[in-house]
Image (cartoon, rainbow, N blue to C red; front, side, top):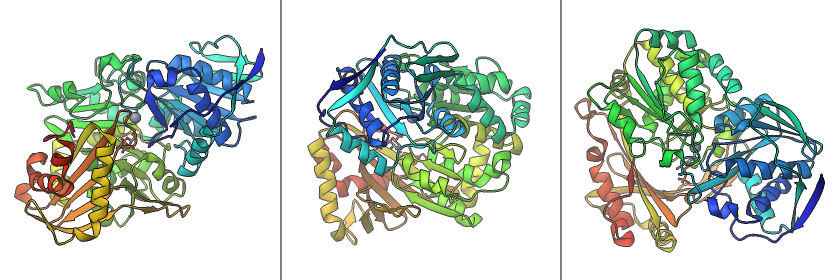
Length: 543
Ligand code: G1P
Ligand code: ZN
């Protein structure tokens, strides 16, 4: 087996976004494209000689071939050991756990998360560091810089390694260890949660529907919910990972998990419904006739996590991304624990978790997690909910009603405008930015603007500053609208408009969120000129 050094030139725009590099699959499949990026990662993190890497993905189209290339490149670059999920599968949280548990130097996760998969859909690659979390901004910048001056990559000329059977083999001088993707993760969940109590719930007739959306969590959910916790078989639906996610869009929200919503709002609704995304880090929680928004879920978990053994000592603090509703802040204030507001993207939670400043984190985009790994974790959130349901004996609807009664309710919604012309989207944001100083005091569709700014974050741990993290407009009466452009899209620009209004009037806690937010929605449109500039009257996706 010979190591080849292949001359190459930089490829335009290999700039990693919120979660690594994400492009159309065919872009990744172009000769040298993946290779250039992998070499840029290896070089950007200071070389990989003698290192141990964890490798796995969500099973989408091109997962296996990409892993084959990455392994041959790792061997040629001097990696000592690659720990690979069997058949190339590892959920993102399971990969994070393996990096930590095996004290690896980092990992490569192949996924475009909740984006559809297939030869004409999306693919992605992300580097996680030794703490198990997404690369920091500084490391990402080094990787990106390397993509712009790369001149060669190294690859071993060898047959493809088999990754289907457990065990250890060698590729050149590198050890390739194929591991069960589920067992270490399932063990960690057993340490955190009261499996006896949850099993008792199921043996008592509690009914649940977990929609794995044909994605990577299927095997994890079957093993944990059905095999270990005794939920009836069939509790997990769409549980076999498929390269194109069954032709669906594996994003666990009421729009893309509509089939689950229909079951949970149907005449014979189970007690509990949940779903996870392509790579298993997002979650959706829904009780019988009761959808729980991710922001509310974060607040409730902050309030009641101590009911699970892994959190019985209470929480150090809670962090949420800026666009996430402030519901969790009020719980933290009531409990006297710290709360933090970070830019969008899980990587910003890493330092706070590493420093022990927070125990739980969450994002409005269906991400919730804790210090057990350094990624958001879909099944973890589901199991924490199950643990709370088992201990309290209450339904999801009862828990939410009590929560809102105690803390008030943050009505919340996100409106997405997808595949917008990038120039138009950037102009909308630039225009808002230019007017920020003049907005306070102005009226927008009947609401008076009380404040406006652009979010910047000073990391309290490493002192770094991240600017340009979203435009915030505050309205008198407690409303807020946030505007930012997606960093994970692969087609044009996606404008995200985050809408929020707090309500503490007891009689007004059970409204439909879109109705409750009508005035803020109209004001957001007026102030940002969305309809005028984008030429659309309704968003593409409302969550
Ligand atoms: C989106 C979500 C963000 C999340 C990220 C990765 O990023 O909004 O909360 O961290 O996906 O799952 P965006 O496309 O908005 O940049
Ligand atoms: Zn994901």
